[in-house]
Each structure stands twice: as C-alpha cells, then as structure tokens.
Image (cartoon, rainbow, N blue to C red; front, side):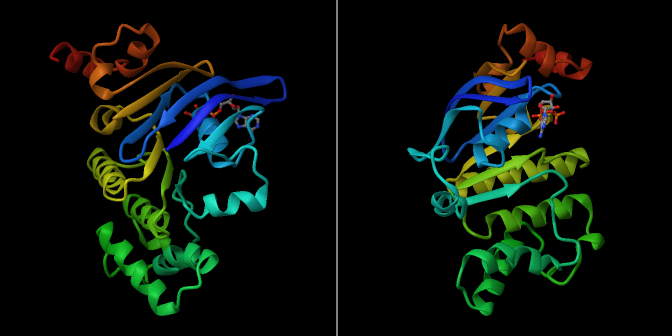
Length: 250
Ligand SMILES: Nc1ncnc2c1ncn2[C@@H]1O[C@H](COP(=O)(O)OP(=O)(O)OP(=O)(O)O)[C@@H](O)[C@H]1O
C-alpha cells in the first residue's frame, strides 16, 4: 500500500501540485488522470522519488520514503517496477539483456537463474522466444510488453506506469491494460498508472484520482465516474461525442 499525504510540488514559482493526498491499495488498478499539465507525471515522479516533493509525505507500507536518504531508500527501490513513456529500453541491448538488466544490478543470481527469470517474464507477456531481438526490431506494443517484462523481473511490490497506451492502436492498448491489470492481481502489486486513455479509465479504473489545476478534484471508481455530477470530471471524461453517447446508455 502507498499513502501520499498533502503533497506539494513547486518548480520555481510554478506550484504544480497543491496538497494531494490519497491511498493506493495493492491488487487494484490505481489510475491518475487529468488534463495535460495537471501534474500527473509530476505526482508519479514525486511518489517514486524521481522528484522530491516541496512538502508532504509518501509512505510505502507505512514507511516514510520522503524522509529517507538515498541509501535507506534502496530496499524499497528494489521492490519498485517502472514503465515510463517510450518504454525506455536500451537500444543496444537485446530483449533478454534488457529484462536481465535489473537482475544484474540488484541480485546475485547466476546467469542461468537470470535467464530463467527472463524467459518466465517473456512468457508472461506473450513474447516467448523473442530473447535475441533488439528493440529496433519490435513494434510499439511489443516494446511496451518488454518494458512490462523488465518491470516485473524483480517481482516488484509496486508498479508505476506512465501512459502505457501512448502510440498504441486501440486493440493493443486493451491488451496492455489487461496485462497490467492481471499482473496487479496475480502479484498483489500496488500499481499506479498515469493515463489519458478513457478506455483504460472505464476498463480497468478500480480507483481513480482526477487531478485538476494541481489539486485532487475527484476520487472514485470507474463505476462511480458514469454518475458523477463533478463538472470538470464530466467535461474531461465525456469530452468526445462517443463517450457522451455511451454515457447516455448507462
Ligand atoms: N522538471 C520540471 N521543471 C519545471 N517544470 C516542470 C518540470 N516537470 C514538469 N513541470 C511543469 O509541471 C506542470 C505539470 O507537468 P506534468 O508533466 O506533471 O503534467 P501532466 O499532467 O503529466 O501532463 P501531460 O498529460 O501533458 O503529460 C507543467 O506546467 C510542466 O511545465
């Protein structure tokens, strides 16, 4: 479980996050949504420690991550899997080498153990046998799946994903959402996903935090979203004619 308490983040005079609190539970899909520039990625980076919040606390299973120094954070970091935009694969490494990268860095496993784990993760994302390919030989959806395989290679307790559907067709997007959702349940991970994708919101949004002007404007589930009278949330989620028509039928 991750608890964020009253997170503020300023860049110079620009106060991007203005007192955000929430609880992200394990085994469910936690989504952060909001318009462009509302602070979603900044919040995700504050949670994982890529940005330091100006004030406020982030607790990983009750441990105050924000108060910790670099060394103290290492044990928690080894339980974090991340999939950021563009999959961030190393172009000069094969698929297998990419997946083994965190294992080389953080474990003392033998080469055979690491290869077994890479094979297991590749099978889990339906890419068995693609070990020797390079990222340049993969489609966008395959790169995301390799990114997910790498993110789960260390059996993380926490998974952070920024825009998993960017650049993907609608069918592949749903496959990626389903994969994230299945793995979240299977490993009982605390998963936090930043997304603009309304299919994801409606499809897997067990717990949704909607940011607006740097504040938590609304929080609830995909079932509740259809019936909310929150004006800004409605304008955001039901911006398209298709989504408005779909809502009318609910
Ligand atoms: N490293 C940084 N230095 C200065 N300003 C930043 C930095 N990172 C983000 N910002 C500012 O913070 C604000 C929120 O950016 P952020 O990327 O968190 O928004 P977002 O909701 O993820 O947007 P998008 O949906 O477009 O990706 C923007 O005004 C941005 O310019």
